[in-house]
Image (cartoon, rainbow, N blue to C red; front, side):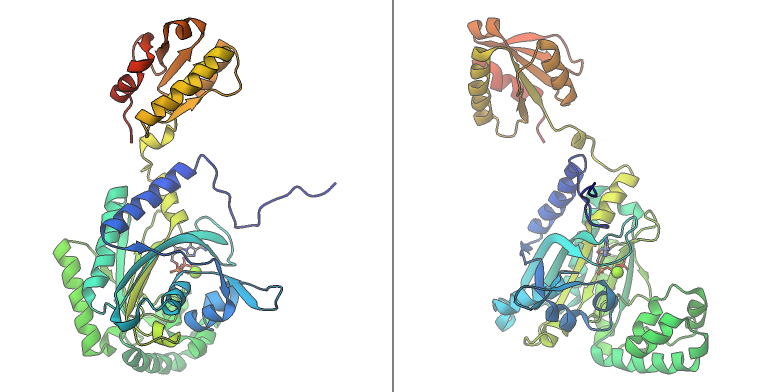
Length: 429
Ligand code: ATP
Ligand code: MG
Protein backbone atom coordinates (compact mmCIF):
# COMPACT_ATOMS: atom_id res chain seq x y z
CA UNK A 1 0.00 0.00 0.00
CA UNK A 2 1.36 3.43 -0.84
CA UNK A 3 2.00 5.99 1.91
CA UNK A 4 -0.80 8.51 2.44
CA UNK A 5 -0.02 11.86 0.88
CA UNK A 6 1.17 14.47 3.34
CA UNK A 7 2.33 18.05 3.42
CA UNK A 8 6.05 18.70 3.93
CA UNK A 9 7.13 18.90 7.56
CA UNK A 10 7.03 22.47 8.82
CA UNK A 11 4.75 23.59 5.97
CA UNK A 12 1.21 23.96 7.21
CA UNK A 13 -2.26 24.13 5.80
CA UNK A 14 -4.22 27.02 7.20
CA UNK A 15 -7.67 25.53 7.61
CA UNK A 16 -11.02 27.32 7.28
CA UNK A 17 -11.34 27.52 11.09
CA UNK A 18 -8.12 29.58 11.15
CA UNK A 19 -8.44 31.76 8.07
CA UNK A 20 -10.87 34.30 9.62
CA UNK A 21 -8.23 35.18 12.20
CA UNK A 22 -5.52 35.42 9.53
CA UNK A 23 -7.70 37.68 7.41
CA UNK A 24 -8.56 39.84 10.41
CA UNK A 25 -4.87 40.21 11.24
CA UNK A 26 -3.75 40.85 7.67
CA UNK A 27 -6.68 43.20 7.07
CA UNK A 28 -5.90 45.21 10.19
CA UNK A 29 -2.26 45.62 9.17
CA UNK A 30 -3.12 46.45 5.56
CA UNK A 31 -5.55 49.18 6.62
CA UNK A 32 -3.00 50.67 8.98
CA UNK A 33 -0.30 50.68 6.32
CA UNK A 34 -2.66 52.32 3.82
CA UNK A 35 -3.47 55.00 6.36
CA UNK A 36 0.20 55.80 6.95
CA UNK A 37 0.85 56.09 3.22
CA UNK A 38 2.59 52.79 2.46
CA UNK A 39 2.01 51.03 -0.85
CA UNK A 40 1.99 47.31 -1.47
CA UNK A 41 4.54 45.58 -3.69
CA UNK A 42 4.40 41.91 -4.73
CA UNK A 43 7.60 40.09 -5.57
CA UNK A 44 8.13 36.55 -6.87
CA UNK A 45 8.59 33.76 -4.34
CA UNK A 46 11.59 32.32 -6.21
CA UNK A 47 14.73 34.29 -7.03
CA UNK A 48 18.26 33.56 -8.22
CA UNK A 49 20.27 32.13 -5.31
CA UNK A 50 22.93 34.76 -5.93
CA UNK A 51 20.52 37.49 -4.78
CA UNK A 52 20.33 36.12 -1.25
CA UNK A 53 24.03 35.33 -1.04
CA UNK A 54 24.91 38.88 -2.00
CA UNK A 55 22.37 40.65 0.18
CA UNK A 56 21.99 38.56 3.31
CA UNK A 57 25.66 37.57 3.43
CA UNK A 58 27.41 34.21 3.07
CA UNK A 59 28.13 33.79 6.77
CA UNK A 60 24.64 33.96 8.18
CA UNK A 61 22.43 31.16 9.45
CA UNK A 62 20.05 31.74 6.58
CA UNK A 63 22.56 31.39 3.76
CA UNK A 64 24.73 28.79 5.48
CA UNK A 65 22.03 26.33 6.38
CA UNK A 66 18.43 27.46 5.97
CA UNK A 67 17.79 28.08 2.27
CA UNK A 68 15.71 25.91 -0.05
CA UNK A 69 17.99 25.96 -3.07
CA UNK A 70 17.65 23.91 -6.25
CA UNK A 71 18.63 23.93 -9.90
CA UNK A 72 15.83 24.52 -12.37
CA UNK A 73 15.63 22.86 -15.78
CA UNK A 74 17.97 25.45 -17.29
CA UNK A 75 20.60 24.67 -14.68
CA UNK A 76 20.10 28.04 -12.90
CA UNK A 77 20.43 27.94 -9.13
CA UNK A 78 17.19 29.22 -7.62
CA UNK A 79 16.06 29.71 -4.02
CA UNK A 80 12.67 29.96 -2.34
CA UNK A 81 12.86 33.37 -0.68
CA UNK A 82 13.85 33.15 3.01
CA UNK A 83 12.91 36.82 3.61
CA UNK A 84 11.58 39.78 1.66
CA UNK A 85 14.12 42.59 1.84
CA UNK A 86 16.50 41.19 -0.78
CA UNK A 87 13.78 40.74 -3.40
CA UNK A 88 12.30 44.15 -2.59
CA UNK A 89 15.66 45.87 -3.11
CA UNK A 90 16.19 43.90 -6.30
CA UNK A 91 12.76 45.00 -7.53
CA UNK A 92 13.19 48.72 -6.80
CA UNK A 93 16.61 48.68 -8.49
CA UNK A 94 15.38 46.73 -11.48
CA UNK A 95 12.51 49.18 -12.01
CA UNK A 96 14.50 52.27 -11.15
CA UNK A 97 11.90 53.50 -8.66
CA UNK A 98 14.36 54.70 -6.02
CA UNK A 99 16.53 56.61 -8.49
CA UNK A 100 17.16 60.35 -8.01
CA UNK A 101 16.40 60.05 -4.32
CA UNK A 102 12.74 59.09 -4.83
CA UNK A 103 11.17 58.07 -1.55
CA UNK A 104 9.45 54.69 -1.56
CA UNK A 105 7.39 53.40 1.35
CA UNK A 106 6.56 49.81 0.46
CA UNK A 107 5.08 46.74 2.11
CA UNK A 108 4.52 43.12 1.18
CA UNK A 109 2.98 39.99 2.62
CA UNK A 110 3.55 36.36 1.81
CA UNK A 111 5.25 33.07 2.52
CA UNK A 112 8.96 32.75 3.33
CA UNK A 113 10.95 29.51 3.44
CA UNK A 114 13.71 28.43 5.80
CA UNK A 115 14.92 24.94 6.55
CA UNK A 116 14.83 25.18 10.34
CA UNK A 117 13.77 22.72 13.01
CA UNK A 118 9.96 22.99 13.09
CA UNK A 119 8.42 23.75 16.49
CA UNK A 120 5.73 26.02 17.87
CA UNK A 121 6.20 29.45 16.28
CA UNK A 122 8.96 28.21 13.96
CA UNK A 123 8.12 26.64 10.62
CA UNK A 124 9.73 25.93 7.26
CA UNK A 125 7.08 27.82 5.36
CA UNK A 126 5.99 30.81 7.39
CA UNK A 127 4.43 34.15 6.56
CA UNK A 128 5.65 37.67 7.02
CA UNK A 129 4.29 41.12 6.56
CA UNK A 130 7.31 43.24 5.75
CA UNK A 131 7.91 46.87 5.01
CA UNK A 132 10.79 48.78 3.45
CA UNK A 133 11.39 52.52 3.16
CA UNK A 134 13.98 53.93 0.77
CA UNK A 135 15.69 57.33 0.59
CA UNK A 136 14.80 58.63 4.03
CA UNK A 137 17.80 58.77 6.32
CA UNK A 138 16.58 60.48 9.48
CA UNK A 139 15.36 58.99 12.74
CA UNK A 140 11.83 60.33 12.05
CA UNK A 141 11.08 57.47 9.71
CA UNK A 142 12.63 54.86 12.04
CA UNK A 143 10.28 56.25 14.68
CA UNK A 144 7.29 56.08 12.33
CA UNK A 145 7.83 52.35 11.79
CA UNK A 146 7.87 51.75 15.51
CA UNK A 147 4.93 54.08 16.22
CA UNK A 148 2.91 52.28 13.58
CA UNK A 149 3.59 48.86 15.09
CA UNK A 150 2.72 50.28 18.52
CA UNK A 151 -0.64 51.37 17.12
CA UNK A 152 -1.09 47.90 15.65
CA UNK A 153 -0.50 46.25 19.03
CA UNK A 154 -3.06 48.66 20.45
CA UNK A 155 -5.69 47.74 17.87
CA UNK A 156 -5.06 44.04 18.39
CA UNK A 157 -5.08 44.27 22.18
CA UNK A 158 -1.46 43.13 22.48
CA UNK A 159 0.26 46.19 23.96
CA UNK A 160 0.72 44.71 27.41
CA UNK A 161 2.21 41.55 26.01
CA UNK A 162 5.07 42.98 23.93
CA UNK A 163 8.24 44.82 24.76
CA UNK A 164 10.39 46.98 22.48
CA UNK A 165 14.13 46.37 22.45
CA UNK A 166 16.38 48.89 20.73
CA UNK A 167 20.01 49.22 19.81
CA UNK A 168 22.20 51.14 17.41
CA UNK A 169 24.85 49.38 15.35
CA UNK A 170 26.45 52.61 14.14
CA UNK A 171 27.70 53.21 10.64
CA UNK A 172 29.75 50.54 8.90
CA UNK A 173 32.92 52.47 9.95
CA UNK A 174 32.08 52.62 13.63
CA UNK A 175 30.79 49.06 13.50
CA UNK A 176 34.12 48.05 11.96
CA UNK A 177 36.04 49.66 14.82
CA UNK A 178 33.77 47.98 17.32
CA UNK A 179 34.18 44.64 15.58
CA UNK A 180 37.96 44.91 15.92
CA UNK A 181 37.71 45.65 19.63
CA UNK A 182 35.27 42.79 20.10
CA UNK A 183 37.46 40.30 18.23
CA UNK A 184 40.43 41.37 20.35
CA UNK A 185 38.39 40.76 23.50
CA UNK A 186 37.03 37.42 22.26
CA UNK A 187 40.49 36.26 21.20
CA UNK A 188 41.72 36.79 24.75
CA UNK A 189 38.94 34.47 26.01
CA UNK A 190 38.76 32.08 23.11
CA UNK A 191 39.29 28.93 25.23
CA UNK A 192 36.20 29.62 27.26
CA UNK A 193 33.84 30.31 24.35
CA UNK A 194 31.38 27.71 23.09
CA UNK A 195 32.16 26.09 19.77
CA UNK A 196 29.64 28.09 17.74
CA UNK A 197 30.98 31.34 19.12
CA UNK A 198 34.57 30.32 18.33
CA UNK A 199 33.52 29.82 14.73
CA UNK A 200 31.44 33.00 14.58
CA UNK A 201 34.28 34.99 16.10
CA UNK A 202 36.11 34.44 12.81
CA UNK A 203 33.22 34.75 10.39
CA UNK A 204 30.66 37.12 11.91
CA UNK A 205 31.89 38.22 15.34
CA UNK A 206 28.92 40.45 16.20
CA UNK A 207 26.74 37.37 16.14
CA UNK A 208 28.63 36.05 19.17
CA UNK A 209 26.68 38.66 21.18
CA UNK A 210 23.56 36.73 20.21
CA UNK A 211 24.72 33.51 21.89
CA UNK A 212 22.34 31.50 24.04
CA UNK A 213 25.24 29.73 25.82
CA UNK A 214 25.31 30.79 29.50
CA UNK A 215 29.12 30.50 29.93
CA UNK A 216 29.74 32.62 26.85
CA UNK A 217 27.11 35.08 28.06
CA UNK A 218 28.95 35.39 31.38
CA UNK A 219 32.19 36.22 29.57
CA UNK A 220 30.43 38.79 27.40
CA UNK A 221 29.47 40.85 30.45
CA UNK A 222 32.90 42.47 30.27
CA UNK A 223 33.02 42.76 26.47
CA UNK A 224 33.41 46.21 24.91
CA UNK A 225 30.08 48.01 24.44
CA UNK A 226 28.87 49.06 21.03
CA UNK A 227 27.58 52.33 22.51
CA UNK A 228 31.15 53.40 23.35
CA UNK A 229 32.14 53.09 19.70
CA UNK A 230 29.25 54.94 18.11
CA UNK A 231 30.19 57.82 15.85
CA UNK A 232 28.57 61.22 16.50
CA UNK A 233 26.15 60.92 13.62
CA UNK A 234 24.81 57.53 14.76
CA UNK A 235 24.61 58.77 18.31
CA UNK A 236 22.54 61.79 17.25
CA UNK A 237 20.34 59.54 15.11
CA UNK A 238 19.71 57.22 18.05
CA UNK A 239 18.91 60.14 20.36
CA UNK A 240 16.50 61.50 17.73
CA UNK A 241 14.72 58.17 17.63
CA UNK A 242 14.46 57.88 21.39
CA UNK A 243 13.14 61.45 21.70
CA UNK A 244 10.32 60.60 19.29
CA UNK A 245 9.41 57.39 21.08
CA UNK A 246 9.39 59.34 24.35
CA UNK A 247 7.15 61.98 22.78
CA UNK A 248 4.55 59.35 21.87
CA UNK A 249 5.04 57.53 25.18
CA UNK A 250 6.27 54.23 23.80
CA UNK A 251 8.27 52.30 26.38
CA UNK A 252 11.51 50.62 25.28
CA UNK A 253 14.62 49.02 26.68
CA UNK A 254 18.08 49.42 25.21
CA UNK A 255 19.56 46.00 24.54
CA UNK A 256 23.27 46.43 23.72
CA UNK A 257 23.45 42.78 22.60
CA UNK A 258 20.75 43.18 19.98
CA UNK A 259 22.56 42.66 16.68
CA UNK A 260 19.99 40.91 14.44
CA UNK A 261 20.79 37.86 12.39
CA UNK A 262 21.39 39.56 9.08
CA UNK A 263 24.59 41.23 7.99
CA UNK A 264 23.21 44.33 6.40
CA UNK A 265 21.93 46.39 9.31
CA UNK A 266 23.36 49.76 10.41
CA UNK A 267 22.33 52.34 13.02
CA UNK A 268 18.85 51.50 14.36
CA UNK A 269 17.91 47.88 15.09
CA UNK A 270 14.81 46.89 17.01
CA UNK A 271 12.74 43.90 18.01
CA UNK A 272 9.31 43.54 19.52
CA UNK A 273 9.51 40.55 21.85
CA UNK A 274 7.00 38.68 23.96
CA UNK A 275 7.26 36.16 26.77
CA UNK A 276 3.93 34.58 25.76
CA UNK A 277 5.30 32.26 23.09
CA UNK A 278 8.11 30.40 24.78
CA UNK A 279 11.40 30.36 22.94
CA UNK A 280 10.05 31.93 19.74
CA UNK A 281 9.68 35.35 21.34
CA UNK A 282 10.38 37.84 18.53
CA UNK A 283 7.21 38.86 16.72
CA UNK A 284 8.54 41.81 14.73
CA UNK A 285 12.10 42.76 13.92
CA UNK A 286 13.80 45.34 11.82
CA UNK A 287 16.21 48.14 11.43
CA UNK A 288 18.17 50.40 9.17
CA UNK A 289 20.32 49.13 6.31
CA UNK A 290 21.91 52.17 4.72
CA UNK A 291 24.62 50.16 2.94
CA UNK A 292 22.52 47.39 1.43
CA UNK A 293 21.32 48.99 -1.80
CA UNK A 294 24.86 49.98 -2.76
CA UNK A 295 26.11 46.52 -1.82
CA UNK A 296 23.53 45.14 -4.26
CA UNK A 297 24.74 47.31 -7.12
CA UNK A 298 22.64 50.46 -6.72
CA UNK A 299 23.55 54.04 -5.81
CA UNK A 300 23.99 54.72 -2.09
CA UNK A 301 20.39 54.70 -0.80
CA UNK A 302 19.33 54.78 2.82
CA UNK A 303 16.84 52.09 3.79
CA UNK A 304 14.94 50.97 6.84
CA UNK A 305 12.36 48.23 7.35
CA UNK A 306 10.92 45.48 9.45
CA UNK A 307 9.18 42.13 9.15
CA UNK A 308 6.67 40.52 11.43
CA UNK A 309 5.88 36.84 11.67
CA UNK A 310 2.18 36.25 11.09
CA UNK A 311 2.08 32.77 12.68
CA UNK A 312 3.58 34.08 15.91
CA UNK A 313 1.15 36.99 16.09
CA UNK A 314 -1.82 34.74 15.35
CA UNK A 315 -0.62 32.37 18.08
CA UNK A 316 -0.42 35.32 20.45
CA UNK A 317 -3.94 36.51 19.67
CA UNK A 318 -5.17 33.00 20.46
CA UNK A 319 -3.05 32.53 23.57
CA UNK A 320 -4.18 35.85 25.04
CA UNK A 321 -7.80 35.36 24.04
CA UNK A 322 -7.80 38.42 21.78
CA UNK A 323 -9.70 36.82 18.91
CA UNK A 324 -12.68 39.10 18.20
CA UNK A 325 -15.95 37.41 19.01
CA UNK A 326 -17.56 38.25 15.65
CA UNK A 327 -15.00 36.13 13.78
CA UNK A 328 -16.70 32.98 14.96
CA UNK A 329 -19.83 33.74 12.90
CA UNK A 330 -19.50 33.54 9.12
CA UNK A 331 -23.18 33.53 8.10
CA UNK A 332 -25.87 36.12 8.91
CA UNK A 333 -28.86 34.58 7.22
CA UNK A 334 -29.63 31.07 5.95
CA UNK A 335 -32.29 30.70 3.29
CA UNK A 336 -34.27 27.43 3.21
CA UNK A 337 -36.50 26.54 0.27
CA UNK A 338 -38.84 23.60 -0.12
CA UNK A 339 -39.75 22.30 -3.56
CA UNK A 340 -38.63 23.17 -7.06
CA UNK A 341 -40.79 26.29 -7.50
CA UNK A 342 -39.75 27.71 -4.13
CA UNK A 343 -36.09 27.02 -4.91
CA UNK A 344 -36.30 29.10 -8.08
CA UNK A 345 -38.02 31.94 -6.26
CA UNK A 346 -35.48 31.71 -3.43
CA UNK A 347 -32.59 32.04 -5.84
CA UNK A 348 -33.94 35.14 -7.55
CA UNK A 349 -35.01 36.65 -4.22
CA UNK A 350 -31.56 36.08 -2.74
CA UNK A 351 -29.90 37.75 -5.71
CA UNK A 352 -32.17 40.78 -5.28
CA UNK A 353 -31.30 40.93 -1.59
CA UNK A 354 -27.58 40.73 -2.41
CA UNK A 355 -27.99 43.67 -4.79
CA UNK A 356 -29.51 45.72 -2.01
CA UNK A 357 -27.27 44.55 0.84
CA UNK A 358 -23.86 43.80 -0.65
CA UNK A 359 -22.31 43.08 2.75
CA UNK A 360 -24.96 40.66 3.92
CA UNK A 361 -23.61 37.16 4.45
CA UNK A 362 -26.45 35.14 3.04
CA UNK A 363 -26.16 31.41 2.54
CA UNK A 364 -28.74 29.71 0.42
CA UNK A 365 -29.47 26.06 1.10
CA UNK A 366 -28.02 23.72 -1.49
CA UNK A 367 -28.98 20.09 -1.92
CA UNK A 368 -32.68 20.47 -1.02
CA UNK A 369 -33.74 18.32 1.97
CA UNK A 370 -36.59 18.04 4.46
CA UNK A 371 -37.64 20.79 6.90
CA UNK A 372 -35.70 19.06 9.61
CA UNK A 373 -32.48 18.66 7.67
CA UNK A 374 -32.52 22.23 6.31
CA UNK A 375 -33.11 23.69 9.78
CA UNK A 376 -30.28 21.61 11.12
CA UNK A 377 -27.98 23.03 8.47
CA UNK A 378 -29.25 26.56 9.11
CA UNK A 379 -28.50 26.21 12.80
CA UNK A 380 -25.08 24.66 12.22
CA UNK A 381 -24.13 27.49 9.85
CA UNK A 382 -24.14 29.86 12.82
CA UNK A 383 -26.66 32.15 11.10
CA UNK A 384 -28.71 34.53 13.23
CA UNK A 385 -31.85 34.04 11.14
CA UNK A 386 -33.38 31.46 8.86
CA UNK A 387 -35.57 32.50 5.95
CA UNK A 388 -38.21 29.98 4.93
CA UNK A 389 -39.77 29.68 1.51
CA UNK A 390 -42.31 26.92 0.85
CA UNK A 391 -45.40 26.71 -1.34
CA UNK A 392 -47.55 28.84 1.02
CA UNK A 393 -44.96 31.63 1.25
CA UNK A 394 -44.50 31.48 -2.50
CA UNK A 395 -48.22 31.95 -3.10
CA UNK A 396 -48.28 35.00 -0.79
CA UNK A 397 -44.89 36.41 -1.91
CA UNK A 398 -43.54 36.38 1.63
CA UNK A 399 -40.82 34.56 3.54
CA UNK A 400 -40.89 33.10 7.02
CA UNK A 401 -38.36 34.97 9.11
CA UNK A 402 -37.17 32.83 12.00
CA UNK A 403 -34.70 33.95 14.66
CA UNK A 404 -32.30 31.09 15.38
CA UNK A 405 -30.62 32.52 18.48
CA UNK A 406 -33.70 33.11 20.59
CA UNK A 407 -34.58 36.69 19.61
CA UNK A 408 -38.37 36.47 19.29
CA UNK A 409 -41.02 34.62 17.28
CA UNK A 410 -41.16 33.66 13.64
CA UNK A 411 -42.88 36.24 11.46
CA UNK A 412 -43.90 36.66 7.87
CA UNK A 413 -42.21 39.33 5.75
CA UNK A 414 -43.10 40.47 2.25
CA UNK A 415 -40.35 40.00 -0.34
CA UNK A 416 -40.30 43.72 -1.09
CA UNK A 417 -39.78 44.58 2.56
CA UNK A 418 -37.17 41.92 3.26
CA UNK A 419 -34.00 43.89 2.52
CA UNK A 420 -35.08 46.79 4.71
CA UNK A 421 -35.97 44.41 7.52
CA UNK A 422 -32.64 42.58 7.31
CA UNK A 423 -30.79 45.89 7.32
CA UNK A 424 -32.29 46.70 10.72
CA UNK A 425 -31.61 43.39 12.40
CA UNK A 426 -28.27 42.19 11.05
CA UNK A 427 -25.28 44.18 12.21
CA UNK A 428 -22.83 44.11 9.37
CA UNK A 429 -19.10 44.21 10.02
P1 ATP B 1 14.55 34.06 14.99
O1 ATP B 1 15.62 34.66 15.82
O2 ATP B 1 13.27 33.77 15.73
O3 ATP B 1 15.02 32.91 14.16
P2 ATP B 1 15.06 35.81 12.79
O4 ATP B 1 15.94 36.85 13.32
O5 ATP B 1 15.63 34.70 11.99
O6 ATP B 1 14.13 35.20 13.94
P3 ATP B 1 13.87 37.62 10.87
O7 ATP B 1 14.66 37.15 9.72
O8 ATP B 1 14.18 38.92 11.46
O9 ATP B 1 13.85 36.47 11.99
O10 ATP B 1 12.31 37.57 10.50
C1 ATP B 1 11.36 38.48 11.05
C2 ATP B 1 10.27 37.77 11.80
O11 ATP B 1 9.76 36.67 11.07
C3 ATP B 1 10.72 37.13 13.10
O12 ATP B 1 10.77 38.09 14.12
C4 ATP B 1 9.63 36.13 13.35
O13 ATP B 1 8.49 36.74 13.88
C5 ATP B 1 9.35 35.65 11.96
N1 ATP B 1 10.06 34.39 11.67
C6 ATP B 1 11.36 34.23 11.32
N2 ATP B 1 11.65 32.93 11.10
C7 ATP B 1 10.49 32.25 11.31
C8 ATP B 1 10.11 30.86 11.22
N3 ATP B 1 10.98 29.93 10.85
N4 ATP B 1 8.82 30.53 11.51
C9 ATP B 1 7.92 31.47 11.88
N5 ATP B 1 8.21 32.78 11.97
C10 ATP B 1 9.47 33.18 11.67
MG1 MG C 1 16.13 32.69 12.41
